[in-house]
Image (cartoon, rainbow over all chains, first blue to last red; front, top):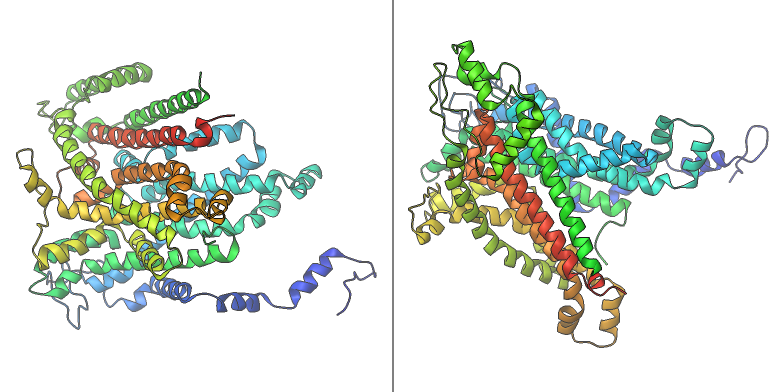
Length: 309
Length: 326
């Protein structure tokens, strides 16, 4: 093994670190970790990939448009309408596929926004530890004292139901949880000597946040991202189901369940009709289960947070 | 004075402070309404005088602090104001008092919630404690996988599965939980069996996982190991050594989930068309009937905060370390 040296012959710690890392490429490392993943995690990852492909290429898979109306309401399952049509004569299968795009897209956007708001404020609070920290923490305490679904319902009644309002309201409510977690894990890192050193050599707040602290608190944040996504996804589905979330004619899984729920009573005559409203609900459940499985495995991999002794 | 009293009083003070701030937030809902909402409520044909009278009734001509104080006073004396619906442009006011809308539905929601709690709490505690005692056995794994799956299901999915199985196939329970004050108790229980079952399935999963985690945490502590090593019987280890310290987390788990029940009740009520507070709130949100939304939010948030406060106080009182300070 060659010794770590700089071009002019001196010893360099940075070079030594890269030497050890270079023995395996990033891809090889990822593959090595993936090989140890349990079947549940594999199942989760495959399901998530499938959902993403469907969501990204929705127009390629869907036989009809998401709000294209055919002159047959409640058509049974057939070759033309794989899952039948709904009360207005729209193809349920196509709406299911577009629903993946709309529902997952809005949930991802909301989670990202929540992490941006909560994460940056949490880091700032942890680094500064002054009045800003106090004000933000107390404010978050109060916001978290109200159940978020109730709060979301109240805010939606004030600002009106639209996709943009939905994203902002849920993101702000969820940012409180992200803030708590980010602040808590960042507090452990802020007291480290290298952060002190960075402060002393005059680095700005942004640098310390991005280069010194963020890399060290990534694993819990990534796991939290998965769990938050599930929570946001379920909240948005619940609100849409209640009729105050994503508004028609946009196809989305929560409102599809509500629109077709009446079909359940025909179960004894035609089971497929009764299954029509269940499929979007099952699609929501399957994705949440998949994300949970992956997050579970990720937590086992990266930290001692698991409860097995 | 016993130091535990000071802790409890501090905690109570903090709780009521939260309640106060939350009431301000809920009150400000009306401040954020767009300026022309008078017309939106009364209809576009409303005369300027009618709109003006409506704004005066809401007190929008007074400063916010004065309005807040009178609002709190009214709420405390049981007057929640009048609903926005039932008003029209001609100035004829057929609106109902918010309290008369809420009162029968609150009773129904409390009935559903207490019925669920009576079944769910003991069930979850037994499952959680046994899963912790027999951890890493197939029993534990099955329960764990099942609950993880149930948690991931949206409430309405669980509810519709139950309707499909019990209402349309087996026909043992009605799918619409249509109850009123005059319904006899047994009939009431029978009709609200499915919503209660749906809620039970959802919260048992949460509660059981949290109980299991709390007990496992406890069983890993050195003093339990010490008790086992000196040969104390299993029952005595659990009842005498583990349980006193487990009360606090268990009470917390129960209160947290009863608070969760407050929220879960909204979706389940809508699925089963159960005449409860959650359904009222959702209808009010769709029609933007702010006074009703405010009243429901206040009740839900208040219950949530008080339950959590109650849990905190219980866990302080039952904590042996705080009870016998050195």
